[in-house]
Length: 452
Ligand code: GTP
Ligand code: MG
Image (cartoon, rainbow, N blue to C red):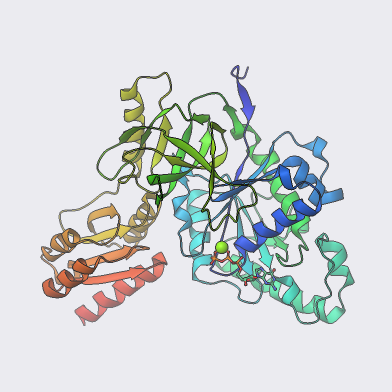
């Protein structure tokens, strides 16, 4: 007995991994294959995301996918730049992403952001698979463009195969060191218990059919029920980024994971001081064929249905927070919706102490992850906020009674010029990094030094 407007939404797939391991290339390859299959028009560019419908997946995957086995509409891939924490992709009660692809360069293996991503996947219980990328760089590799992995693997010489196997087992070993049992994907029976590793090349397209098949299968098998939404309902989403846009002022890039958003909607967005109530002025999508990374020219749309990535232009968005909730009011009481947003924000709120360090982070999700890491390392926090390091943060830090707490830990944020000066004068130590555990370790080294 599903609601009247029940429908199945597109599962949201986060593509994450260390800088330069090939996340964007993998999505470019999928878009490129769709063009070759004559399905270019079917793939839609979203803000920060790419929607790939089932028929395109089935065209790319060939024999591997029978579209009759699926009723989910396709997959929405979200590209997370390596410098930007995947923790942004948060939604109520967990992670915004339904499933994830962790991209690992077979030459480079595990790197700091790979480990960080794994940590977050584990904490948020997000099912994922590993794309062992750049297999074409194995010396002597003989490529077959766009081929599934089995035939192309069988075609390689014994030496090349051995070389690839070695790298794949290295990755499987590293996963095991991090507490995940993993194997090559065709040997995995239960994808919830074991992590499947799919060898791919974002350059030649080899293994991409397998990757899409596994993702589609995983979603259908384990996510199907969670995909039932009220399509016509008021939209619910998460802010990915707050950006100034010429002619529009401050805008928010959001991922809508439930319902719809229209140009005549009033929305409530989580802000740095309080929820922002505002009227949508425009809904913007990148123009077809526009490079997703440039995002310079937009097309106005009247309505967007979940799941989708969209830029929302509206007044008063300058104080919106990355990682904060967005809710469409539609024909409900505004106060109820504000309350929902406040409740959601309260859930993410960081517990602070009378004395401790100041923590700044780029998004709500990363702030939460920082707070978790500090908690584990028994580092008390006096103040935790989203945003760059500003002079008033220095003031707070400088009042700490303990020298080792006259400190600011900044994750993925900039230090404003006057704040840096102030820190110098007030003798406040600034630690910044784009990898959480490195930030915490850096601080712990400092404390150790002090106590020596
Ligand atoms: P960030 O967004 O900066 O985190 O990087 P990314 O993970 O999106 O990596 P990107 O796709 O930009 O690729 C980085 C470099 O690796 C580029 O020069 C790509 O051309 C190259 N590359 C990516 N995938 C492959 C592959 O499968 N084979 C080869 N030979 N090169 C690849
Ligand atoms: Mg990229």
